[in-house]
Amino acid sequence: MSARLRFPIRFKILITILIVTTSVVSIITFTMANLFHTDKTAYIHDLTSEMAMHTAAEARSLLEGYVEQLEIYTRVVFERDLYQDQKSKLLGQLFEDFREFVAVTVYENGKESATVYDAKMLKEAGLTKEKIFAHRTKNPLPWDRLQASEVYIQNSTLLSNFPTFTLAVSHRIPDSDQEAVVAAEIRLDGLLNLTRRSQVFTSFITDYNGYPLAHSDIQKVIQHDPVEWIPVVKSLQNQQSYGMTREFLANDIPMVGGLANVNFSGLLAGVQLPKKAAYLTSRELLNNLIGVSLALLICSAVLSLVSARYLTRPLEQLSKATNAVGKGKYDVQLPASSRDEIGDLADSFNQMAVELNSREMALKEAQTALIRSEKMAAFGQLGAGIAHEVKNPLAGILGLAQLSLRKAEKNSPLTKNLTMIETETKRCKTVIENLLKFARQEKVTFKRIEINRLVEEATAIVAHQLGIHHIKIEKQLDANLPQVAGNANQITQVLLNLMINAQQAMEGKAGVVKVTTQRYNEAYVELRVLDTGCGMPKNLQAKVFEPFFTTKPVGKGTGLGLSVSYGIIKKHRGDIRVKSSLGKGTMFAITLPVARSGNG
Image (tube, rainbow, N blue to C red):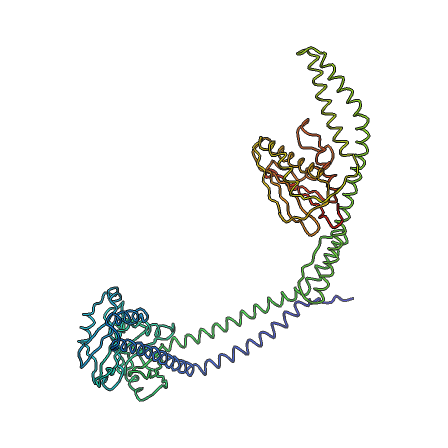
């Protein structure tokens, strides 16, 4: 029989995906390269033209807004129904509202008749009214153009940190046939921000002679340097809103530029960029496309391996988990890796494992409870028998010792021995009484009781004893607790025992004993007693409820207190648990059933 070459399915999936991906990516890359090569020049020209027209439209909108705002200033200045202080207040408010306005001047018959300005802004910029008017005198307004109802705009930047321009319009004086000219000094911030929006193009706004009003390079505005391609700028004078593009040389550098008519006071909007930068962008885009293609191939290879592994790994995990369950390890869980038949199979296996684990845990708990119950019952019967047999002789010994003490001389060796016999007999009697309490199976009467009231009573009883040892009692009681069914005396006995044990766990040091009550769930109420004592290791926590088990020194405890408490809580159909950490303290949690209708 010849051996067959094994070819795993994951490698078949890998090869198929790589072939398909390589073919598709190669076709897309080749097609895109040809399209970029063919349409590169047309794209650059269209983009520069569109950018120029967009800049022109935004500039026109911004300048028209300035004109409207200037008209508001003019109406306030010529309003005859307003007092001077009212006008001043309104003009001051206008400067607050229109933060880009620096100064507004009204000219009548070519002479200044009124000027309002933002003194605070001029002071911060280092300008004065006199400097502005000196510049105005050196560069007078074109009165002939203004009388023809044209809007006049001029670059009036005096400081590099405070670029401004002049906007002037004519205005008919109310109740008069005369025309007045209103000129405003306005900050260039709005127009400069417009030219700086693009990180690729150099944008500008000029007049028809190429002198910039706003430029992405602020130095050209300050120095009034004209745009290099003035002949191209002048060729656009007869056009309206259409854009145009040109290729030209600027300082021997090939450039592509776009222009559009702003249709406002003879202004043009333009953008330009080096052809090298435009082609570099295209080359970078192609290089990025090639890089993306290679990355896509690598990702396809990785994803194909992962997907193949994704299909086969759940079956391998299921096989291992089945072997583990067969060996009795029921805490095995498979991850829900998919929403298909394999995922359904994993969910079914997980449910089976959980149910088997739950049954195993329940069986162990039942066995533990049964062993403990049988141990308690056997010990109870044995303890009851021993207690009954020993109690009477102990009473006789105690009585004879006390009788002999009365007749013995003080400070004699016999008195010392009789005193020791009396003390130890009383201790034995206490142990016997605790044995009887533990073994006693009398039936108690259950009534509806309030846990919070029992807590208050029990803490009041031990408050003095704990206070002597510098132990503080804290209570955190839920005021909305339902009543529970139980015996008040026995629950109080359990509480007292737990708090005394907590006090003894402090080992004479100051600390806190905290008692809390809360709703455990719909059927149970929880009572907790926490201390800040020495704590217990985990190996001892499982033994604290066993008879005669104690962590106290010899002669300091019988080891029956927690056993008695455990029996009381179990008779109340409740549960008592312990949780402790060395050096941090111990917490005993008791759950008792809520009293139902008819309970008690």
